[in-house]
Image (cartoon, rainbow, N blue to C red; front, side):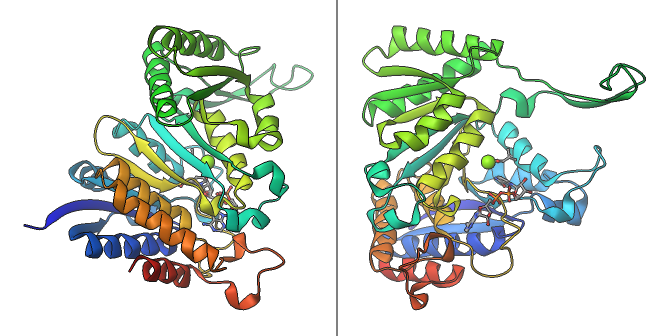
Length: 370
Ligand SMILES: NC(=O)C1=CN([C@@H]2O[C@H](COP(=O)(O)OP(=O)(O)OC[C@H]3O[C@@H](n4cnc5c(N)ncnc54)[C@H](O)[C@@H]3O)[C@@H](O)[C@H]2O)C=CC1
Ligand SMILES: CC(C)CC(=O)C(=O)O
Ligand SMILES: [Mg+2]
């Protein structure tokens, strides 16, 4: 009997529906070639879910995700749902809540340079040559999951002690949360070039001092064969563009990882290239690292490759189909080598007739898979 997998697909907002359509096309093409059936069922998340039922993560969506073999998410958010009311539901809460509910504490964000795209990066070709790193971001702890509060103080919040606002976001980590993400990073390094860079801000933050201590303990006790380097997050932001090819596995807490991964994406030329896998102990979720790109939504010009690479990561991590995942990588490489580009990865040498829209780029990848 034909093998069959259920995939819960979450288009979300902005460019989300446009790029996930291409991810699904590619998944169907891989399924046809591999003789595997992928049954995709859409559910609501983010702004689309707020519009439909005033909840960025409806119960039905969480239930569908939990019942699936994997979840493929696009992205959420947009100006329509930006509200000054702190109690108004926000699309981004949908993502944070599904990560927490599914226990997705590990976020893998691979940053790889394609030779054909060397000209698309703002960095010099000799700086980005050979870049191949894996960002391992802790995804269910830290400041994104601490309490977020706004106060109005009758006195003391203004510069001269007068009345004014005060806001508090709490950053908290527990020992087991650092231990388990450290293990993920060391395990990843053992399958790669054997080096982990742990990023923190230990000169200021207590969470970072604990982070560094625990990462070192896990290293010394269980992974002494892996090379371990520590870097402060501000220095990391600089070194990522100074010597990006030196990094192998980079492990860091939630917010630092969020920020550094957007920076690292730019090394590749565009955020539209960066996929991610969010893993825990149950069902896994795969999504582009970028957001909903409201500035280009609805124009059919978004780069679908991050979503397509997320499908490749799903094949690898959720279905153990590494060979089929490699088909996607090879197909994309072929399309890029032929000179096809979306607008974000085109450079001044790209002829206009080689610049494709979202759906046409998806079609090229599907054609290269045949
Ligand atoms: N995982 C998610 O769903 C995330 C959602 N967001 C939300 O997305 C909304 C927009 O946030 P921004 O700060 O503008 O970040 P963004 O990541 O959506 O966009 C940043 C820049 O990258 C470009 N970009 C992103 N993806 C692209 C693609 N596939 N092809 C071509 N260009 C692409 C955009 O056009 C924009 O110029 C906000 O509501 C934010 O909260 C932001 C990050 C992650
Ligand atoms: C809602 C945000 C935390 C999403 C984001 O920026 C990300 O995961 O990269
Ligand atoms: Mg982000």
